[in-house]
Length: 390
Length: 160
Image (cartoon, rainbow over all chains, first blue to last red; front, side, top):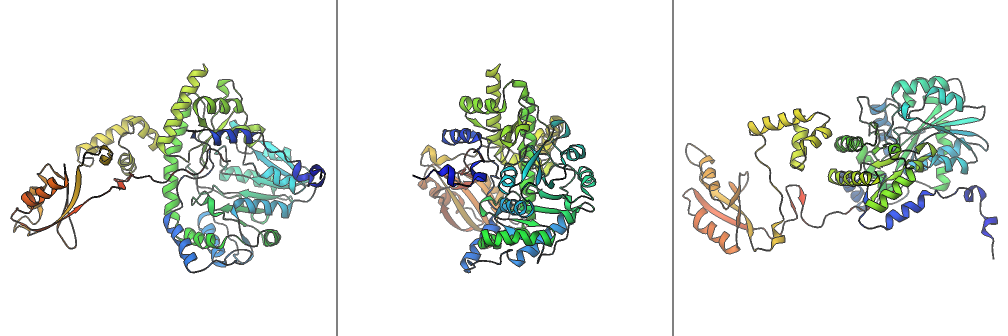
């Protein structure tokens, strides 16, 4: 009998499945759950994009593409990036098409992080950065962002976290789960700290199209002096409602992208061809879809934020992504207790803030990727729950 | 603001003024004033429920009737359209481009009743040259509302 504990890679086995998993399983098995729990759009992919995929199937474009992705697609990515965010990338050497933003994040961290290197990760944030860093042999250094700073990272926090071993800073903005964004002035302050060092930045901008303030999304790569040290990761899942198509990309200096492409070449070969053809259509003719969905999210966002505040759960205005992140401190419960009790007593599924790092304690994440009626029903039930708590 | 408000109301006329104000990022008084104004100037003509009558199984039917008509000298199609819409059976009247002139939707208690209404009332109007009656067999979507089993949410309850 093999003792699997001895044969498996300890870096992998040491990564403990998050405790939240159990809660998820219960939520999935319960009937009649009103969920505000998912991290993906409810809109179907716009029809003209789906139609392009069907067309590409009909034409028999079903083979591998080049490792880095269809050149036409990379050209469109370069054009859209320049038009929307102002950065320039050479489609031949500075862009890699990946399987969702996730693969790009994995590839960049693996290409950059050597054993013992430190990776600075702001939390609460999406859950992948820490395990991927560990798998790459790196050491995660967590910055717990603060509600009073609107969950932005400050230059002071960054300075404190930097050591001679710091290799990489992850910038996950607009942020899942907090809805925080980094404004241009915030990014400039971060850039000031990094200039003159060898620290690289992985800017996960998957929610870049979903910002709701007066200012549109700004990429740190567009800040003076930051292009050379930044890899931007973006993708199609959130902006075009294309989660299942698994398509993202990384953009950065050739020296880095070349190495990420090497990993991608051996581990993946290429992103799905059909998705790539559909994505070209999305990039060329998808602006109106994005705007329509953004407007719809914006109305839901106002409704849900207002709803939580009226219920006495203080909720800051999230300026990006599609999550509200209200504080549940007034209930005296922990995030886990709150979510578990709410699920059992009212059948409403939301995610405890602690799923996104210790700093998420005292908060819960409610996605507003749901119809207005659905959101209203969920809020009503949360209201009943809070009344019964008293 | 008007367009956004109208879009919301056309999606669901039962949103409260307070909900509308929140979603539009404005206050209740402004929304109420806008709605009053739009009612007054005829932009908003009414609010109705979208009903799946088939569920009641009363045997009532609807038909779309194409009318070819001779336009009147002074009034064009206006007068004949206004004449047609007087009937309580008539739910809508549209002037059309293409192969016929007026598109009329009619609702009646039975196939027979609708057929008789067309034969006795609509075809006998002087200006009406011919009619073609198309009975509606099933409604899948009406006024943007899906009446059949539509898409279901396959996203599960929780993902990060």
